[in-house]
Image (cartoon, rainbow, N blue to C red):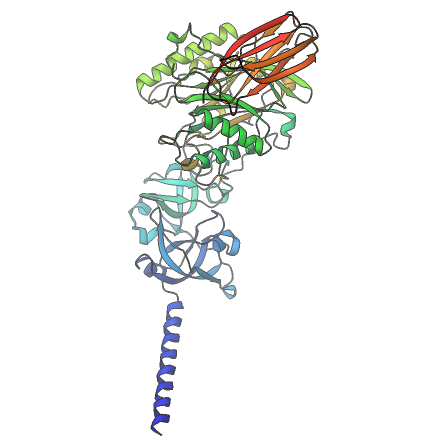
Amino acid sequence: MQTRLKAMRKNLILLFLLVLFSNLATAQQTPIPILQARQRPIGTVVTIAGRVTVGSEFRGPAYLQDGTAGIAVFDNAIHNGAVAIGDSVVITGPLSTFNQLLQISGTGVSFQVIQSAGRVEPQPRVLTIAQLNQLSNDQIEGQLVRINNVTFTTQSFQGNQNYTVSDGTGSIQLRIDGDTDLAGATAPSGPTTVIAVVGRFNQTRQILPRSRRDVGAREFIIPFENRSKDETFEVCTWNIEWFGDLMNGPTNELLQLQNAATVIQRIDADVYALQEMSSDAAFVALVDTLNRRGFRCRGFRTPTGQIQRLGFIWKPATVDSIAYRTIADSGNWSQFQGVKRLPAELTINARVQGTTRRMRIINIHADAGAGLSDYNRRVSDARFLKNQMDRELRNEAFILLGDYNDDVDESITSGQPTPYANFINDAANYRIVTEFLSRRGAQSFAGVGAQMIDHICISRQIFAAHLDSTQRVENTVYIPNYVSTTSDHFPVWTRIDLGRVSSTPIERPTVPKEFVLAQNYPNPFNPSTIIRYELPTTSDVSLKVFDMLGREVATLVKARQASGMYEVNFNATGLPSGVYFYRLQAGSFMQTKKMVLVK
């Protein structure tokens, strides 16, 4: 009997504990007001219920609110399409922060859409910016707001960029998320109503509109987008921040290289003018990576300058490189203030669908800084560049592109006109086609005081050929954390119809007048360089490379060749740094030149 009583007592205790834990679990799953959840310690698992204000629009985080407050939720399933604006949801998960934004995220997040509640879009809270700024984080963060009479200082929106907006009572940072249809849209020209969710990035409060509809923006249609790039010629300028320099640029060099290759391949331009090429090895790795991915290209880093040098990458399928030089040669350095980074010129034959045009691609990286002395150097260098072009390239088709380190509608130096006013004012001969982007408020630089400082200028021979309004700042939202992993500049590129370039098509001499062995370029090189030569008659040709001791290290050509112009690539991978000699022998002609391999 006593044993039976003990067993019953034990069963009763177990039943009591089971009911108790069941009630506790049920209590834990009972939603609490979002305002109350926001006040719990970080790491606390909370259950909340509310209406979704942001679903998949930002690809994370999502947002929801109830009658007390709002909050962000970061969970792949939630912000990748499982919920939509207006859904009624119950969410359980731990509290955490990301860049000081309070959110529910982490292991164990679960949610349920209450289908019976239907889908009802939450109404925004109407506030002025001054009122919004006076509220505490718990009172306003994560909530949908409506602000009237908002004005913008830009004509266009870029993805993952911030803009300061005002309504007459105050100002606040407006964030354009790159995953929304606002990226590339035309901003309202006058006061407008903005609907947005309130977020934050570290100490900065932000408002984030979800779509063009939220701000009354219009889609910007880029013309000729349905025209294949195989029919046009694309040129791009891009400053890849301290590329190959771990001390100054992004710290993950491999990730920066992979991202740079992705961007170049995605744009798919015919010629790239690159700035801040800080390492020969990194540049070579970039070209090799592109070729391994199937983007057939060649390129070189310029041999002059300090750590930050210029570079060119081009498609051999559409571009024949003819010659390379620095614009500011040894006799003119004293006239060029930015001698650290001398402008580089690549002469090319551009080919598209049977049309060939000769062009000069001039790559510049101007002196940086917003101080008056920096500005004066840019003014002096712009004057020098234009004088050079007026004198030497008056009848040539050319493109002057690069990091101008200043804007072209007004200077980044307060109160000063653009240092490139001499180009702007000579509209008969020069057109900075990216001035169009400056006037729309585009930004090619993501740093403090973001500005449009990367530009493309064309000569009059290309005016009719330029496909106007195709110039753009590349929207690099397909690269996660682009600014911290890849560059603080965005690529700028445009499109040209070669058939309308008003210069004489290339007429290479059918028979060169004499034997010519040109100096290799680049020189010094690592690990590859290009050797050009010309044959006036059909000849038995031998082109070999020797080291300092006269030992043959490579035979590049050993064949009978017809008269014409030839170009050979020499790759010195596996050879040590040092001086090498290349010798051309064609019939009775023989000539030797020196080149330097620097690794």
